Length: 501
Image 1 (cartoon, helix red, strand yellow):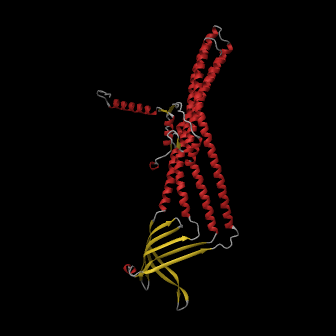
Image 2 (cartoon, helix red, strand yellow):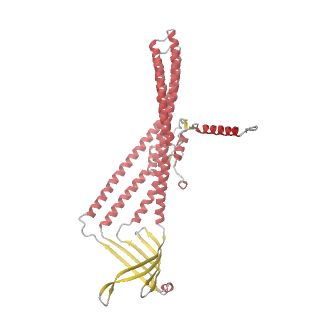
Image 3 (cartoon, one colour):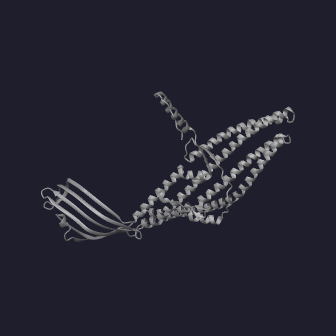
């Protein structure tokens, strides 16, 4: 803890101190932040903060509420329907039996009603059961003012299309698959975010490595050029070799400028994808050589068939195409509808009277719609739906074959990349030792400039090849997780706490 002992100060002194402190804080806040990230931390930030992850979360939530709506529609629904007031004053046509003519008469009335009903959809038949109760009131004004209450204390009914399309049956097949696909799609997108973040990570890692190599190269080239100038004085190096060393210095400077431009571009892309502050400066730590993990193509293919959302989407497309075929076929034939209800009703001048000694009310309605001549329109629609179903089946089969080929090739690449990392790491060590040995031999005059340049190029290539090997390994790893939605390291399926999204 720091204590400041201040003597008497005037207002100007206090103002100067406050302004100085504020400027110091502003300068501190304006300094670019530096963040050291490894691959795991990078993918974690991307899955939490990137715009793609945010979009995936909202897409899942949309499907979640759609599924909730479907489930709610399977439950009984309670509905209150009311007409609080309806006022009518107009001339209407009425029949006059005395003159045997229609005449216009003035009518003035107030009407109000209310209906409370409970409905339950029945998936098996596609019909709807209902129970309701109704009360209505009408008051007519004029020469003979009348009041009437009409009540239906209880009515039980059922309605459905007898031979029509049953949408409830198909919803029961399709909606659960859509929701399961949405959950798998969310996990798939999260793994896709990790895969993309890994690509940005290694792009930036390669740019940083190239920049570091360019800085080391310009320092080394400058030192060698000055040594070459000293050796020329004693005639131990030719003028051509000295000019080559000078050319290396110029080329190293140009390479450093290009590497700096590439680094800025890679940094901007990386920071933008992770949705970080634009002033954040990143320093990456390359992952260690991964532990040996041999994946079985058969097991990976098995997990693809269990978990991949594209296969669920294919199932959904097939069901929807079959649904269209059945709907089109049903609409091409004759249709019949049934409405039946049994209950009680009564009419009286008072509310109590309208509920006294109710009479039985029976309503049965059967409607029939028969197509006679449509010049082949319905038949054409049925054939179109069938052909679309066949096209969907072929497309689904092609997608499944492509997915199988993709996972098998990726697993094989992943298994090979582990050996490539080992050899790339060994090559990098040998290239470092070879360059240092060649450099020392050049300093004592036992190696020429060409040998030194070749050794330097091999060192740079070895460093880049090692980063590329790591990149290919981890990109393959995240791609396999994406396609299978399976954690082979922990030997368990990927999962998410959907309730907390």
